[in-house]
Structure formats: structure tokens, C-alpha cells
Length: 115
Image 1 (cartoon, rainbow, N blue to C red):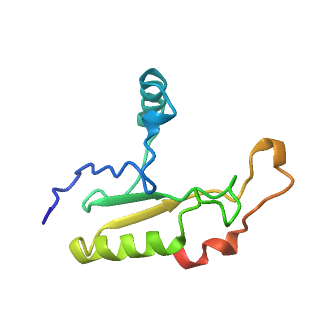
Image 2: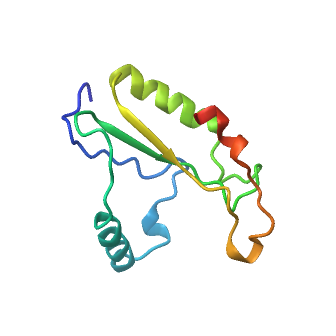
């Protein structure tokens, strides 16, 4: 698309071709979506908002599910070309799953390229 309206919702389901429905049934997705929609999110209301989730906490650096930073950098660059004033946000975690909470695989500085 050449343009997006303010408050447009644009969903890119997967960076690796695996879809959410491959793992989670529709009823579970609906329950999770309702909880998320009940949480207040504060972004710039007058600009298109772009959110990235970068999965890291439970993955080793060489895990195929840990999409390379460069993918996100290039994607953000392409978005900026089309939407120069987009309000971009990224979230992730350095925490490992509870079973290995004492063995973090990532540290804050691993995200410096996104800052």
C-alpha cells in the first residue's frame, strides 16, 4: 500500500512463516486478545504506530526462531521510507523461562542496536 490512515491496524503474522493458529486454538487466541485489549496502551495518537515483538528471552542466539536483528532493522527502515513519522516501539525480554530463570541467555546490551 502507498498510504495508511491514522489508527490503521496492520498485522504481519510471522517472520518465519509459522502462524499462531499452528499452535493456539481460536478460543485461546480470543481469550488472550480480550485481555490485551483491556490493557491501556499509550502511543502517539496522531501518528501511525508500529509495534515489534522480538522473541529473545527463552532462545539461544543461534536458535532458528531468534530472527536476526538485521531483519527488524531493514523492516523498520522500509517502514520509515513509507511512514517517516511512524511511532515505532519494540518489546522483548532478557528473562529466560522460569525453569531456567537463573540462566539468562540475553542481556540488555544485546538490544543496543534497537535503541
